[in-house]
Image 1 (tube, one colour):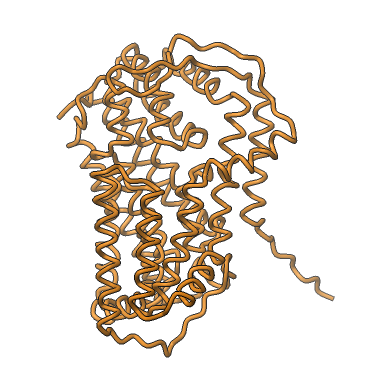
Image 2: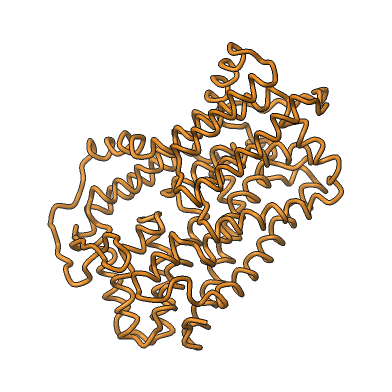
Length: 467
């Protein structure tokens, strides 16, 4: 009798993250704890490390109970993103129940469906511009439900929506351009003119944009030809099943038009608020809460039905919201063990004295790995640039190249770093299982990393500076 083959079952996302926390806890026992003193940088006003102040603290290694506490601390420290996800879930459920969002997207798909690839590429380009100029990262989460609805109409899967929005924004964010949170901070700490060297960054932005667009459209064409090749084929959605009603009313009446206009006004207000008033999670959640309630009332749903829709939407987002806090426990475990500064200290010592092309790419690889430990772009700049900038001087590498290695290293592994709250939130909101997302994005991430090696190497050879 033939034995039935046992299929390999991929662990649940929470299990994968828990294992990562355990690994990080073990690292705190293997790597000596150490610390740099922090000082205020006069040029930027930010708290940065004092490169000459490293000392071992000798209090590393955290126990089981303290490790488990990090999951609670992760929920607390990620509360802004968690509540944003709940608010978005509730508000978009109200929008969906009004029928306005579905009707508007249906009209767009019917009009531009034959040019779907062009529409998807235009959306991707738009998000890349937002990522490269105002540093939009966490904020793009609000666009994912809209793109999911559009992809449903175009008979595409949720992976396409996630890629267009989140990966699109990361193209610009990673390439630097005039991103204030990476290039702006790093150049300030390296005593370089603000946003200098833009021409070289634009060249590589264009290359990454074109190749990423090809990667996404190649996948779109593949699943259009054979839906069984979709990364989401046969996947049971976390946080609630998706039911598509083929007989839904897609008529655009006056109330629905008002709701659609209100939606785009809210998007414009959000972007303006981020750029002009420094808005962040709390303000974004507030405007979308107002949008959801107002849309429901304008469409004639009534207060009780609005409340019921909102609660139903938040219930669908429980998995998405909590996964952010669970992922944050990875970073908090490393911080609690006091080994992050030790890693910086050992890495800088290993780079000293290497040939400059090797050292420059070593800086880049170091920043790639460091991004898992410090997922914040500005935080990583404050922790590493005060050390890497003077190290570049001694190695005959331009500080502009050191900044380039930093923002590529900070950005490329943002595609796969589970410690990055905005990534985990985007993946969870899209309801794409994290392991499925990794399978789809890993080849693209490797392509980006190779481009980074090429860019840093050329920058080192030409003495990349302001131009």
